[in-house]
Amino acid sequence: MKRTGFLLLFLLSLQTVQAQKYIAVTVDDLPFVGADGDIKKVKEATGSMLKTLKKHKVKAVGFVNEAYILDRNRIKGNDEVLVNWLIKGHELGNHTFSHMSLTKNTLEAYQEDVLSGMRHSNTLNIGYRHQPIRYFRHPYLQTGNDSLKKYGLEAFLKAYDLIPVPVTVEADDWYFNQGYRKLLEDGKTSGAEEIGRLYVAHTLTAVKYYEALAQEVAGRPIKHIFLIHANALNARYLEEILNELEKQGYTFITVEEAMKDEVYQLPDRVLSEGGFSWLHRWRITAGKKTALREPQIPQMVVDAYEK
Ligand SMILES: [Zn+2]
Image 1 (cartoon, rainbow, N blue to C red):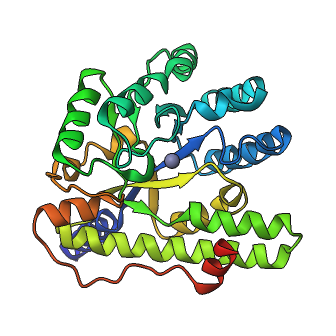
Image 2: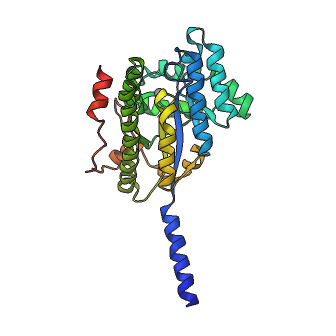
């Protein structure tokens, strides 16, 4: 009897271990997508995202485009937005100065953009975290369309102690956000809310899809890195997404913790014009095919985007 009880306890704890799911949150395009707009609104929206992250005990990395801080006489306001991220315990990363495409530019121009992309934010990060910026995120997730750019950039980042942060889960939030904002601007609130609901559903489907893909690529669940943007859509709907992920058993971890997963050591030799999840990069490098179907953006959202 005693033995059975022990066995049952062992099996139960084994089940708990297997059910553990981990995900780190990264937020691109700080200070905010559309930061040239009303700074008061930007601060409110940022406040809402920060409140959501705090509620779920998420410590994120926010990747900055400094061009958006310095532009259009918004320096002071946007600077305060970045400081708010730091005060709440998040860290800043480099996302190039101007959100440059590696595919469309030379490696030399891109490297210059990386360096000028952290002149100011590095000072802020050191001031609040006593640590220089250590993470880099490729704009458009473009890592190089030829080997000179890809491996040249890898060596360059290494020389400057910048760690490129892969993405395993993304759900086209930037695309949904465009239509969402247009509908809100046109006063079409119910249409915007419909996009919001579709965004939450699309994200949860995407998480399941990338879990399945991880199973195919790594043969096990991995510690994921999730990409979202600092935008109006997440100011309103991130709470619902994190809530649902928590219900599904996810624990939110830091990028540092996620990157201890050996999956991030898998080789990636993909040269491509476009950007996508590293799970595909590792899959393609390993010569594996997948029959999994990528989640499709609903037609209503496509219509709102193209309008
Ligand atoms: Zn970006």
